[in-house]
Length: 477
Ligand code: NBP
Image (cartoon, rainbow, N blue to C red; front, side):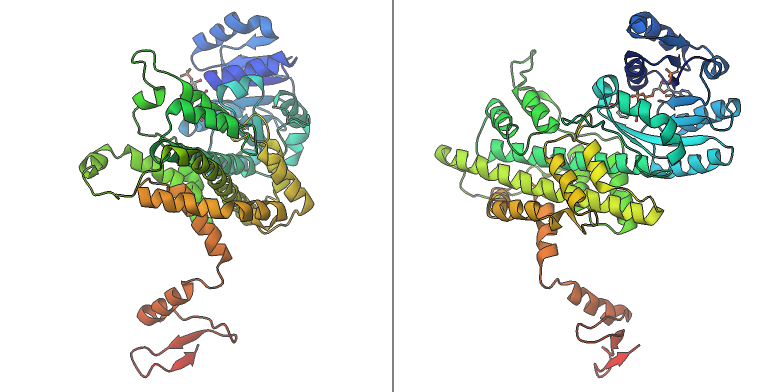
């Protein structure tokens, strides 16, 4: 074979990824279960580079140079297993299968282990950036063996997005499922980012009284500052868009029920298993869920709300500035929680993930790309074993400067009855970490009372139990 890489699964993502490889000078073997898609790709884009159209798995494998590198870009779940089972028997020792789909990292661990036993490298690679990123440069988060990265890395680095300083937005994340785990948390952070932006929008609309077009301008201004990011940029685009059919703001004609494909939910499920408080991300997932309960919402519209005074027009600009502060502070906390989950996953599965590098490869290509990630990169470079992003002096200082406004915005939201679950959850997390004493002491007392679950004391070592039903004397266990 002559192709340096092959892509099987030519829906939007696979097709664009194949074109990206071809545009970068690689010969790309392409294959799809339904061959019409293979033909269409070569017909439409054949002049962009060197493609080898393969009709059967055998033709596809034969087209590849050895060791073979074969990217699977099919629907995550059973289709991925089906394709692996179809191709693996045709491969030789040392060949590399890359799964670029949104696989659950536990599936990736299982597949990697099975294929390792057959001498095949399996690389679960998280790919972010949607169709546009796949074509012009995504952020790529490959797991798998270090050996596989030696052969694959240079190609991935070539097709990946480049950060402003020219660094490719890909790196070897760690063994087996590390890449898909990091991609999962990326998506969880993306959920939180989007929800926080949504809450900021709602406050500017319902409390400050701005129109969608005015809010688009506010976001454009924010995008020139520390909130500079892809999601803020596209938010302004969406908010300024006018529906052609009705002449109304586009955002007012879209049904307000958010859908989800599962990576945000996984982030929260795994966080619960690992014991990591990702409350901001969890509230973002729940917020989508609440929005989807149309019947519940219909049945609740008559429920009483507050009678707080609305802001006057001349008060709106100052409030908008406060919302920017709140958004920034909450964003720092959401990222702090996401990075904590990566730390916990890395410890649990022995992945040895470099958090600074993770932040670095999210600076371009992916949905959460943001100027702010440069700062996270430098923070982890300066202090790789930082217990939390909030331990970084400059982030702590920025939150210190923002916190009064952050509190005011949330207090105003509560007074006006505007739901801001992610703003509130991230502030509560921040205050929980700061607190001298938490009511967890009372919780321990209750647990000891009803279940003799015991407790530890602040003043001496040991495990204790109070004889609650008796003379309330304390015994040491
Ligand atoms: P889809 O997720 O819509 O999958 C369609 C592809 O899967 C087609 O090529 C289809 O072949 C193939 N396929 C299916 Br379905 N079942 C198969 C089977 N049993 N055997 C062989 N092929 C099978 O495509 P996508 O939206 O391009 O996404 C691909 C992957 O990338 C997914 O895992 C997705 O989660 C991930 N991803 C998507 C995005 C995005 O923005 N869309 C971003 C990041 C990651 P056919 O043509 O013969 O039906």
